[in-house]
Length: 359
Image (cartoon, rainbow, N blue to C red; front, side, top):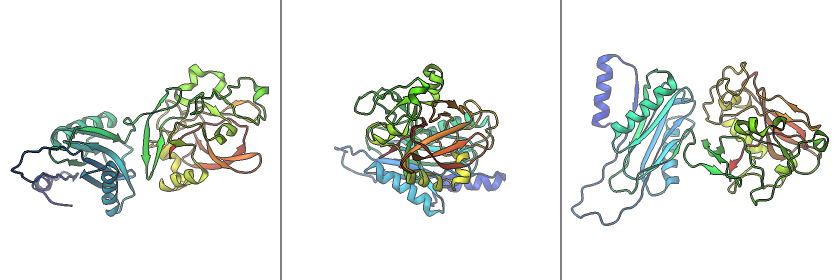
């Protein structure tokens, strides 16, 4: 890390007071110029951390493209030994700050953007304190862009609140980056394919039973109660059309699900990092869940191959786009009773949730 005056001062204060903390910082200044600026070139910055260990960090600023800035931050973070992803990126003149209360990002975090590092850090600290019930946010990473780099704005943050995606019905979805993948944070709830064609809604058990053509339903046929937050349940025949997800997105293959769980430490532990924490939507036995990935998996239950509704709040089931055989296809299951992600196959006529991944 480049040692700057403000970092030395911080370290000196820490040594003198005996407070244990971690401070990550970087700033870039424009070279002095005698000529007035006549052209503003937009530049980008980004921050990255290891989501399972916030002590690995990386920053980037003054890149000409967003992709280069995010890659620069991730590469620097990985060079320190982490397994890193972007938590914040921005464009224009200003500073970005990101704080966590300890090494695990999923415990509590906050971000801020402002014209100065101090203002950005104050915002990040306040946001983190809201999530930590007042526990101090001791770790942070920040960067500042150079002068005259265009309009200042946030592009992406760890909760996916920026860059909302809309389906053909106009439903909005947040996004999250996990490793090299980008996922929708919510279960799909569209009633039409992305070309505007309606998907058949089936409410009758006999009509759903062993159905061999596309269909969707709402759990217990109750859209008012279950569309938000659990989304719709689609049979695999609807998945097979390749038109369920918004344009630019698709239903993940079996291999893409495996990439996700491998990145998060393997199938035996990935569920705890993917499931929404707490018991707002999961039943009370949902313990040991951190949601440190930001994926916020929810237990939408299922419509069985015979048309029965089961397991709302106990199980989340998500189709892959990969066939398992003539009558079955692969899906992933997360349970209320543990932290694993199970790879299983089921009849194509079953109704499961769908998450979309970016092309």
